[in-house]
Image (cartoon, rainbow, N blue to C red):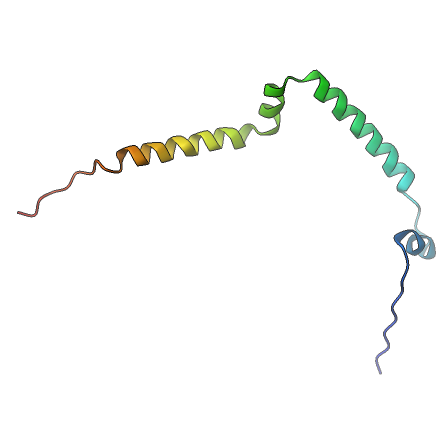
Length: 85
């Protein structure tokens, strides 16, 4: 015998039913602190420094990839071929 029970409730209702604590006020307070810190940091940083901080490897990696492609394209037509006869 197989019994299936579907419960339709919100996350808040499920949390209360299971006796779990409501962490929403703590999450809101932490998110507000994070937002304030990020805003203060963004106002203090210059755009170029901000991009270098967030994407240091990505930008340099893209530049290296472009250089590699350009060197391959530039040298692609200059292969040494030996005449068979």
